[in-house]
Length: 282
Ligand SMILES: [Zn+2]
Image: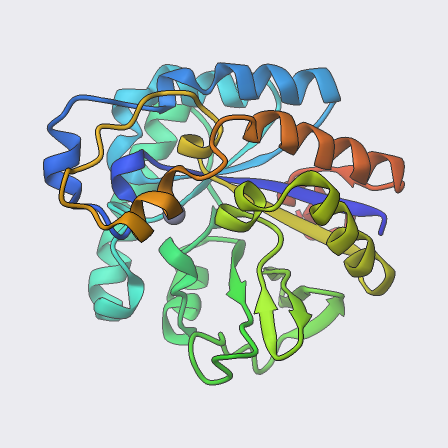
């Protein structure tokens, strides 16, 4: 493994698909203002990351977006309000994506050419529309062996130029890695699994993964990297509450351990835009 991409879905805690966004937003509690410890950790480790920002929060976090750019990271788009692409028409998707991109570019003061769909719900007609809008890369493909037909983004016409990297006429798709164990695909690269698994287990799984793959993509969310106390609704089920809160404390430290492990294995942690540059695509 010679390369790793650390990606962040820059969204608020109330964008989680199992929470009622409006009610949770009204509590006034925000996690993004506490993201600076994470940014400092990236500086300490000499790591550059790719941040996919939800359009509707760009303006209120303009100072954070500018700081992210100032520190040399890349900014992409993570939709307008984190609703699923599968519920939208292509026209609606195009309209929302335009609005989101404009808001993020204005707030961050940089051009946006990358995209990640909320909950990885990208579909082929929307991917084509994204390219027509001027975007140059997307990172929404994920494969679950237990759902062979569900959400497996069709990339007919793309060249599989490297493990998990697909290119067609200069537009690239970066797949999120999963590790097949028995008949299940485990997305070891982020979200709940990263928080749930202790580092020794992650190291074991990553070691298994590294034997077969050239690159690795990690994905994390601000609520997983900040200590902000979340005012979760009282009627939230025990399972959901667990899913949301497990491993938040100490996750930043664990992520640093993963980064150091990757570096020891010879992986450079670079932005997706840097990877495109190195391939002569940008
Ligand atoms: Zn997201």
